[in-house]
View 1 (cartoon, one colour):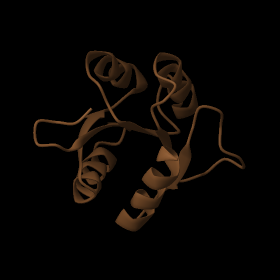
View 2: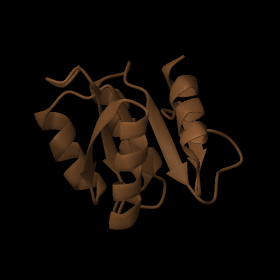
View 3: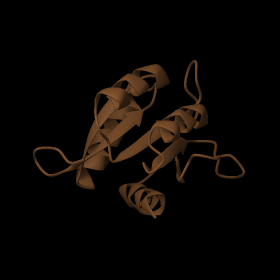
View 4: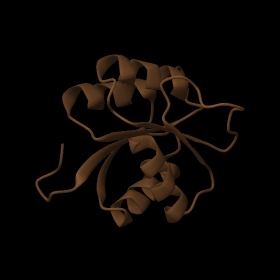
Length: 119
């Protein structure tokens, strides 16, 4: 789904406010409009209330970790790409995750993660 301005919508879930702000800026440079949530629970509420083209979630969240969150998203919409954001990447990509973006990241690395997740 696109916004009224024609940009695709991305849900970003990270408990660090600064990371959410930086993701919004980086995603805007990539032509996306981002909404953010500080927890998986808040992210699920936003996801349920709107339609997103992509989800980016931190791996380590309070309460529910990012791969559990990705599983819930995929149960609702198996077609939506999910990118896992982490400073400490797991040895293999978890189920229900389409791509991993390692912190710190560049806009180019974000573009590559989006491209990989959308394949």
